[in-house]
Image (tube, rainbow, N blue to C red; front, side):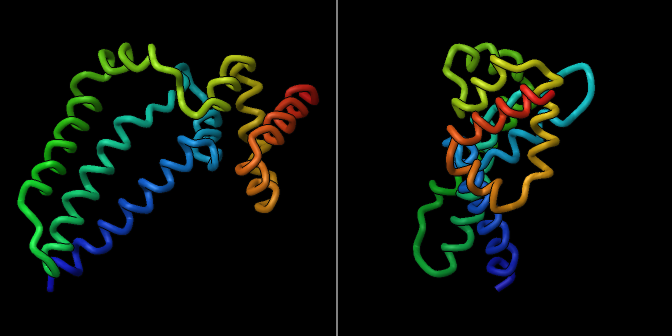
Amino acid sequence: MIELLCTAPVFLVSGFLLVRLGLVIIGMHKGPLLSLFEKYGDEENHFAPIPRIIGLLGVCTISGSIFFSQFMQIPVVVAYIGVLCMFIYYLIQFWLPEAFRAITDEFPPLPVWYHQLRERTGREERRRIAYMWLRLPARTRLLYNSNTRAFEHWADLIIIAG
């Protein structure tokens, strides 16, 4: 019973975060990426979805295998796959971040609107776009989340107004 109470919330939250990350990658949720532009400092953060996907898959697999083992017979191999994902996440995130970044720089970045915005704007313009995003009403943000072309037009208007 304790396993159910402990693993069910972890499984649900990791599943929700995995779906949210999927929406960010396909360009249907722009807020988390725009929040990267808000920060001041020397180095601007880059969005790397692969380590997050691997880490969330590991957590989701481990907690799901423990949770569902209460109801059905699940092979132990499923939990080992989750442990392997967590080990790969640990390697990528803490031991080999520079090598991983060198490998992923060759692939096209995801989402496409994020890459295009980084190419055609400066840091101050991106910061202005990010802060103006916070001032938009929720329904307008929902519209721009679902329509990338409208978002790009809005971003162009913010750049021109600045």
